[in-house]
Amino acid sequence: MLARLLLLSATVFAVSAHAQTTFTPQVSEYIKVKASVVAITDVKLIDGTGRPAQAHQTVVFQEGRITQVGKAGKVKVPKEAEIISGAGKTLLPGFVMLHEHLYYTMPAGSLFNIAEMPYSFPRLYLAGGATTIRTAGSVEPQTDLAIQRLIGEGKLIGPSIDVTAPYIEEPGMDIPALNTVHGPEDAARTATYWADRGCTSFKMYMHATRADLAAVVSVAHPRHLKITGHLCAITYREAAELGIDNLEHGFMASSDFEPNHQPDVCDYPTSHRGLQNLPENSPEMKELIQFLISKKVALTSTLPVFEPYTGREVVLGGGLEALIPQLQEREQTTWQRNQGRDSASAALFRKEMAWEKMFYDAGGLLVAGTDPTGAGRTVAGYANRRQIELLVEAGFTPVQAIKISTLNGATYLGRAAQIGSVEVGKQADLVLVAGDVEQDIRQVRNTELVFKQGVGFDSKKLFESVKGKVGLN
Image (cartoon, rainbow, N blue to C red; front, side, top):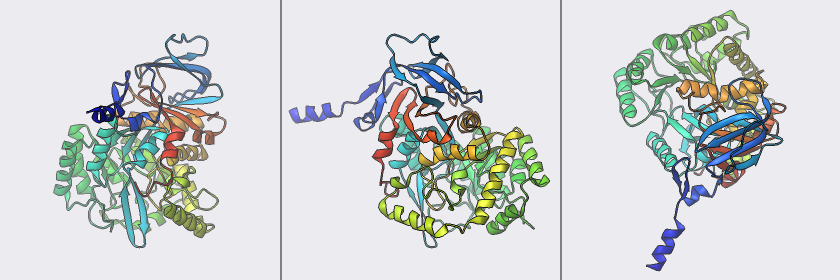
């Protein structure tokens, strides 16, 4: 009996009074701030709204909600508050990233292998500042839904998750983990099945047809659920006309400029050649941008997954050490082999940056994500911070890049009243960075604390906990 009592006492959960969440000891180990009232004082604030950065600000939050934001010295800090000095630091909203996955891709010869990362990826996302993510395509939807639940119950560490249903894809890709449908009736059945089980969005994939998209729209929109797409057989213009809400990868998946494009046929290499041959300032691209904006279609920037090899990091955002040793060796070998051999990719990457800026400047809703797939260089958490850096490289100001990565994502999800900016009444989802992000965007990598609903997680400790694990779990 005594042994049993000792065992029970060892598993007593730590309770966060303000979030009303009971955390297991395994989660509590990474919580650094759990006071019900917290004040971050004398900090530089980029609030996510697009307003200029403000120096010497104090932000107070209580019971997981922001109660005061203002000039240090003018904000009355409650006596019971835990005070965190923000001197020399920057406070940002928690990132809202809309093209994330809970799996990692490990190409092996002709086989494109995919493995779920239920332990490492959720905590990497939170460590990197992503407090809300959308899984834009799922290979294990039941696992993603379970992870969403376990995080909510305080049993796992991770962001809030909007779970996307399995890919809506016709046969054509030899990826064993990829869901396939056979015609629009099957697409509608698939969408209905996963909507009934809690998935909140859908993703059309490369070989999906116009009829498939129309069928999914007929299921999703009456439920107030949204549809995005990594397209190929369907052009962007066709998708917008059919009612798609979002398009992934900026313009990199657009087949609108493919010579002799055949309806409902995906000819991937040809479509990319069409983009490579398209001038940066082409009237055709500007016309497409205006059409998408008129249809209120959001565009997701996923720059990390397209970042060229030459002269850049092996793993984007500095996450090489997160991989298991075998994958570290593979990525270093691949990186070395590709040095100086990706000039065409680099040229298209620069054009993609320019097109995204054109879309944003024209009034389009540009949101952000990372897509941790491809050759394996894109790793959760590390890539989220890298995405913000790349937006600045593309010509956005740090303030704009932060808004794209926070409030714009919240706006798309319909959650802008709760998350996405540092404003009174909103959820205390915050990222505290050591350094001045406005002066040097790479300071965003110096994440110290990530607050999710007012609970402060130790970013560095979370990153340390998964070193050498990605690719395994």
